[in-house]
View 1 (cartoon, rainbow, N blue to C red):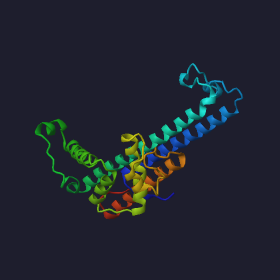
View 2: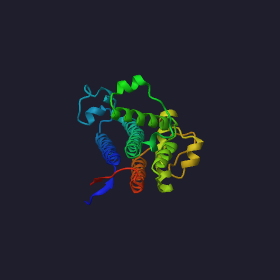
View 3: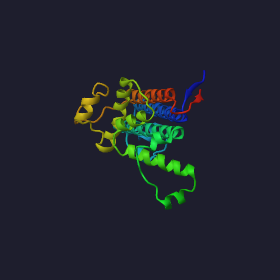
View 4: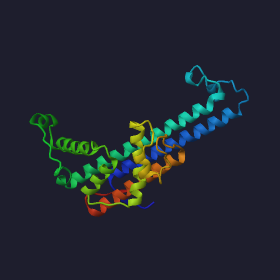
Length: 248
């Protein structure tokens, strides 16, 4: 495969996304196989762990009879998919923070120039050297951006610092999936009218009801956020605000 230019931050993000998608696929296959094994078991009162070939003494929460397995497996799937959306947002934030650091090393004032802030003398002494002070300033700026509590604003801020742009349809699709994380964390996964109004054409959600979750939606979420970050990376590199590191 020919080398392609990308930032160090995107290389790290790409690796994390690969691992996350691999995890989701592994769990999905494992749960499907577990369901098939239990469905084939004629004794509906057999314990779930034993029907799967394991000790119910070791797996004490799987000592329920297999007749209740649809509820348990559905819960496991739901938890995995919710976890994936939350971790996907974490990986996106880590990518943005890494990109902020790369822009800083190219042009520090593009990152810190409009944010003000002061580091006390005592803190400077504790940090010890210029690299540690640089990291402290980057972290401070990132916290300010993140504290806006808006993934859209976080993205727009990082794009503005590199005079970068991305396809609006790609941005909206990724934002729809990233904003699901906010609803999981702060609203027990219940969609509100604002989310449905903005993203109902992408995520088939109903106001007042739990967000729909399933493997196809989670896979779309991963792919859409990856495409967004890929476009951000390409635009940043094109503008010369970050340095490429050839990837494979």
